[in-house]
Length: 229
Image (cartoon, rainbow, N blue to C red):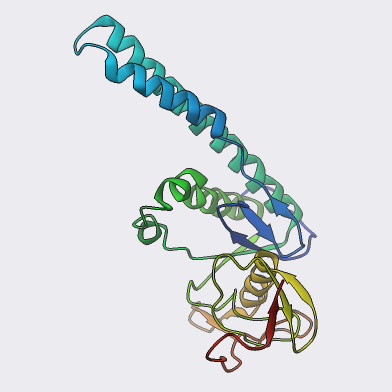
């Protein structure tokens, strides 16, 4: 293990598609813009489809498509490397959700966007760098209701549609960005984990001052307790 880093507040990370990551600090991290490269790939693939099989021109067109795909991969890897390094250097504990990426890509409407993000690669980089620098990486269970709970007072409002981006809790009146609120619940859940005598990670009460207690009773029906802005 390399020289351990010291200092830095804990951080929760909520990964998404429109915004790559929302942090519990309130920061929003945008993913690289791949649209220009994707248009070039689509054009190159149309050229490839018109080339005669076995010809030298088809081989050159196929190489061109491969080069453009490699550029997207290099851009994504550079972005994830810089982001993971920054997170490990600046935060003593990093919490993120255990996303079921293989199940999520079965949604054909979102499969391409999800695959392009590189969520699993980010987690792998964070695990490696956290271990080398003595940082604490905690993976929160995917069934935690992180988007259904007010991170300020713990009021649980239930499931929300993906189109809902901003919420006002009618119990405490705090206005939340949906993703930042989820990130704050993720870091609270991460801080609530500890190890028992057998070295197994278990849940304990959420520390005071971290916001939500994720176990409050759920509401039913038309999502009372919030105002959608």
